Image 1 (cartoon, rainbow, N blue to C red):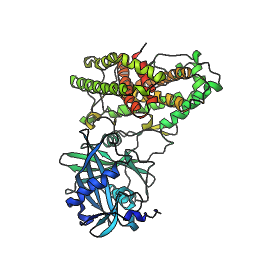
Image 2: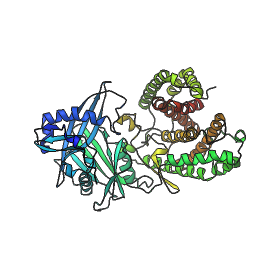
Image 3: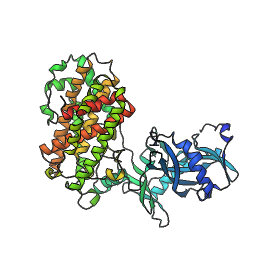
Image 4: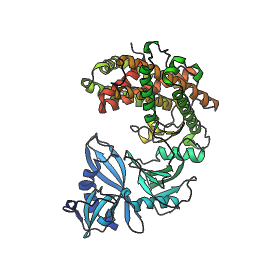
Length: 542
């Protein structure tokens, strides 16, 4: 039951002469909707990505009508322009509802359309609209005259609509669970191009029959003269016990608690070099006594699934978007330009935020600044002519939060790519080891996040805990790397030989850690010690 809308909401409705069925043909409605109504509404939404910038104006660039038996809905494509001279595109499905038809008390605005009072709401809050989307995917047929296209995937069984609800808290996209068995992800931020999440999910399911990611079951897109825009992606809802980030935090907490319970002498723990390959049987008994065997077995499984994902993404010889390619000069120029620009940006952020740091974070930040020429040189030190491996389409934003735990196994998901990158850059074929590096940085984060979040829980000096954390990290990396290379090379995925693998891993780890530095300095400066520690370790600062 929906809470009754406060009577005050009716006090100052926006009044329009147009009928709702012709709203987007009315210039006055479009003008007021995009300025007075939307500007106040959009800035408070979780999915709005422009909070750090100053909104200049919003423009409706396109709209389409979609009607159920009861109601008329609109899909609206918005261009949000910022004073910093850039723009972003968003998708908003909206509806006009009388109070008695509302399924929500979350409203955009009270409005009066041609004398009829009601509310403008996000259509996804209306069950009638959610059912409409489901039915259209299930019964999708090519309609020549419609710019809105629905697609039913090979794996979608013909099942009738039963229920729909939102999945968890709204993030950058909005996910709807249907019949407790399917998830429809509505992309809020949109691009005039196929979304990589749709493209890769469909490819993995329908071309490669890859079992370790949720099966693609359908999609919604809009066809414009400029190109196709993916609006929604439907996949199976896989059984899970939460994401691997939560799982890893619990495991690492257990491991650090056992330092005290098992009376482990931290400085006697055997250390290894970063990237040393380790079979389970090679792990010293002191490490197994401390951390337990199961976490390394799980790391091995995750490495296997990661390698299998890359084998699937790199083994198609027909679909050019997914055929492996070698390195060349164009890629080298693209890579160096991108990374030197990103590095300079992080350098500026660090210099502007230095006053927020203290202790180890400040010490490492100063080392970073002292070695800025060395870091820049490391990014420029990429000789494509020496690369013997191949580039493929990759996940692009691979970390523990993009992995679901399913019993003893894992599902890999969310192939949308790095949020800061352009849609074109996300589709560039890259070394699969970039994903591996992303997972290694996530391991590093899980260790330090545990130490930060439980700083009074473990009765040891911080420097000793950090020392133990670095050792644990290297064992995670060693086990993952051994398994990953074994599985990948066993299926002829060309990731290069040891020297090239180590070079690419170091290069990609540095890129990831520098990328993270900007995020931490902007949102939680105290945590910048994590990427700074990673950078110092990769660069071997004295």
